Figure 1: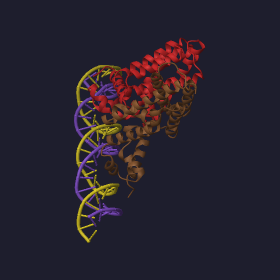
Figure 2: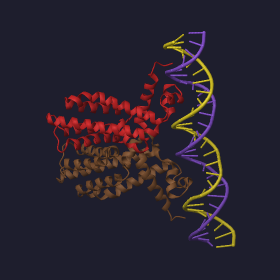
Figure 3: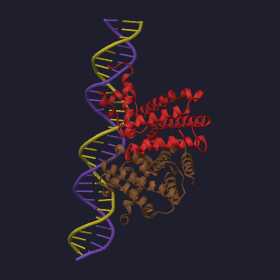
Figure 4: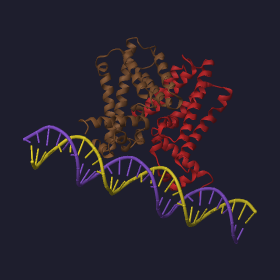
Length: 190
Length: 190
DNA sequence: TTAGTTACTTACTTATAAGTCAGTCGTGTC
DNA sequence: GACACGACTGACTTATAAGTAAGTAACTAA
């Protein structure tokens, strides 16, 4: 028997990878169970329905983001560092196998997600946008970034470009993501 | 009985709508057949396998784009008009029901697409990027647009931002797409 | 030492998707 | 007026996904 809660984490890891590669409808309980050498029903033991799995997935994802940005959101700090951290977070998660970050995948699968998973997806989008807006706002005040328009409109633009680039990269090559990140950074005067 | 080729077009219309709303794995032959009051098997008559349907869908989509840009690609022309046309094309296709344009959906579903459909998706991405690059290149030469960096890197950025915005708009509201379009236009000095 | 709990497995059920195939029905053709 | 053809329908098959129920092995606490 595995250590306490061990299997649950392994299931979430595997499911997250599959979700980012293939989308919510693109993997089954069997696809999760097989590489872990457990049975389909073991996954149902930890996550009775697929919606439970989806919610847990996005909750964990939000938690990672929240931990990484908590201090900045509360006390402010170096906006450049925050943004570069996010660039790395995205690049790392997408580099091998053309994965798409959970936010982008949740967005494109939005209409086929069960309602509780949609709620998580919306929360993730809201939190990410709120954080990005604050980064750009503080960054401009600190004269680290330079841009026209409201911080909010700019945040939407930057986040959209990152999400879109991850996806285009699947078809037009990994260079697309790197080129976009460089261009965004350069546009902001980083 | 329907007029010649009529049903085929209706199937493609319905499938395209479903694809843009729910993704490749998110709809079935039954979902296409039901609103047209035909049977599942009638869809198979026109498109034996789902891959045939996917290929036909993207081929038609590419054709629409090609027709709309053919003259510009050959002889040049007003870059502002081309770009504004694309903004409208995207906004119209996405406004109701949170659809995502076929390029973006193909990207996020890429790894679950049958190989022939992947080829179509790659071709669509390449063509769209080539067109966007030419628009931005000519537009700068004509002094309609102003931007830093290569036309190619900028094209990737603009296209990525549009694709990403469509998707974020599903979760964060339609305003996101409009804000992004305005911001892109403003950044280019339009 | 036994009763309970956790983390599973075995062996199903049910639903739905993709796909097949023989047959039907109207339409123009010779 | 028989015949062929295009565009379907009806009635399947097969595969796979989600989900369930009953049973079991190992540890845990009274």
